[in-house]
Image (cartoon, rainbow, N blue to C red; front, side, top):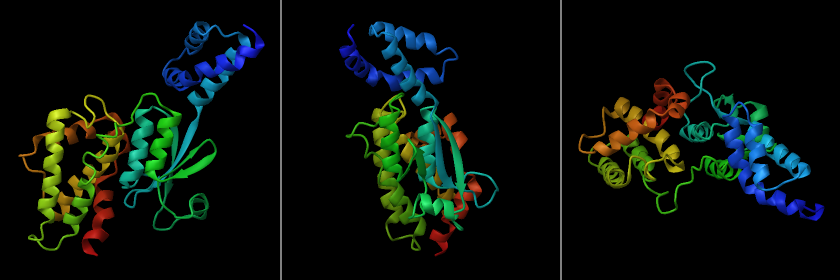
Length: 272
């Protein structure tokens, strides 16, 4: 192979680098995997070194994530469902990361320098701080595509109105204002979808839509139980099974907020 063809060969494996990186993160002996792939592409030593550097860079990158700190227990993760969404994503992709706990009631200067809006989550990728859970999720999917978590566009909106309906019902002061019915209507639609398409929103495998909705349903279950003595009715069994499937995943158990924090977090909405 001539030297002029090296860039083309290197480019040919670029789409495989992230998939390789995912494998390398979970194999104690990664070099045989890399050499096998580079041999398939017929790369000489220069291209192999380029591939090695690129793969190892992705495989060993350590992410920093700013999240809400607990208000009830020192040095514990707080109750932000959007922060948990990002933590779930990096857990499901089995990426290396560390959390920076932020006291949202007394935001430190270092955090406000990172994000002048003072909101979490914020993540550091490629030496750049990125805010907004939607943007962060998309960035993570593009940079670390294996395992794939993207939800097909036609299924991405499924269940997306439940959270706002839950908040409306939680804040409601009148039992006859229709907010409970609105929530039940959304949950019924979701129940029907899971019945036909489950166990997850996109079928057999968990996807980004589940990682977004799961924390919100967790908040809904705890907050409505505490403040309204309300629970999802038995007439919606597929919603219940869906919640059990999501809540029991290792990634969720590891990143969920304490029940006390969820209750404390929603108190201003209820009492305000």
